[in-house]
Length: 173
Image (tube, rainbow, N blue to C red):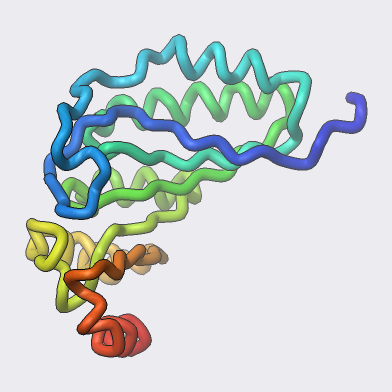
């Protein structure tokens, strides 16, 4: 194998659909495309990178990527794994999710595939920009119970900046 560049970062949007309409989202006042990425898109991507990169960092993003469904992710991970075995490539995964659909089945799949989980969550002020805080907090508690590491991505906006120190202290604790 020739000397390949070390890595590439790729953001995949399995779907642009979203189950929330967060106030700060650039999609919030537009139509969300409800389709799901066809598997042949992933296959074309894999063929395109084949001669070029040793390590491929995949970020699942959206919309809300979990709306693509568990079977979509299971199938995609199987395709990536087959490709990795056939080509000696290494894939690293992460997902940015609003957390409302994160259940034990997804959590177990992400733990098995070493997918880094990042949840959009603004702590005690989550409802300033987002909705469904109870669902997000339940998902966070489930991940904690299972011992699955995760991160939170908090958005500070004009509406929440007055609570900046409280938000910081919340996450610090």
